[in-house]
Image: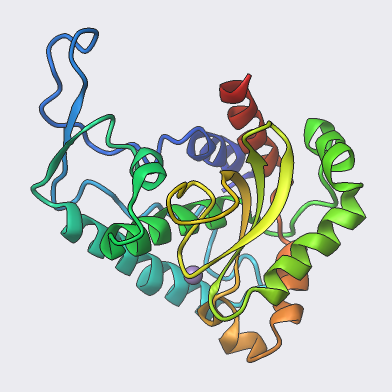
Length: 249
Ligand code: MN
């Protein structure tokens, strides 16, 4: 895949198209009645990677990528569909909407919906060879809100390194439209207003579960974090920032 095609693919994914499920029982007049979504056995689908399994090597090895995408992420998608199959609920049925309202007690949706959302974002914000540094609005907001690219990178790496056990480090846009670094346990993410303390819209996510690095880095999480930062697709992060800000404004 050439660079142009790759950007087109990640751009579409960044706009949330991948996560919009099949809509069932759409009302004939959506203006006057709320939409209802019915979930089927394949409502949510495992997105294709925008690159080959070995394309991020040596930062992230091919075996890790293949198992992570084909087994772990696929498992979250399968269990999410199984949990929702045959149910209907009001609203647009988008995964983001489900996560915004998920109850802490709904383990099936919290863990598997979170797992599907988080991994979809994770694949999008990486690219073979990475990119030097954030540019444009993203760089400006990182400087304004986080004290510059270096300070951000340090805070983000620390969030990943100090997340106890399994979880994620995030760069997100908070409710005030400011960038913030945070971390969450397990498959939680900042969209889950009822489950996490710091809420917002994630634009960069780093998986720090051992399955994301153990084959190549064993217990050296910091070495994996450094490697992850070398393959970040800053253009995809910028696209997510612009999409988020356009909703906040
Ligand atoms: Mn993972």
